[in-house]
Image (tube, rainbow, N blue to C red):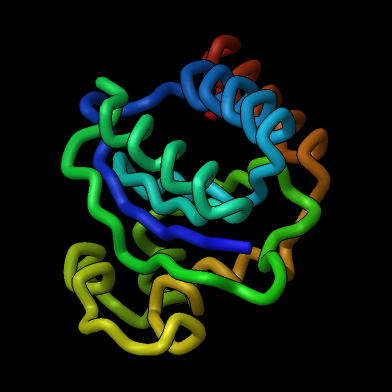
Length: 159
């Protein structure tokens, strides 16, 4: 088993509909390839952990680096692992605002957070931050429903 954590910036901000479309596509591909993980969207930045067979995870990361929706793609951590951190997610998903990011991470600047010096994988702030969402695990369907609700509210002019 292998993991890879990366951060990237969206070339342009995603709408709830765009995020839902991306999420559905990722889940379908991940199920087919035996990949699990979680994707966080933080005000125009993505943070993702991918878990699976080494070759599959590395190939997927290379594909993400070529994706025109991403810029400034940077690998934070990678390596072998004993077991998956997010075994119940083909692709868990959360949107995180800056206030929540600061509260959960303890960092005021997202760029400083992700450029933290290399430490053991379990002690890295990115892994600690991502594991915060493990306690909030919902099924893939429950996350899709949340996104759909946001999309419907937006199209009805409600916030």
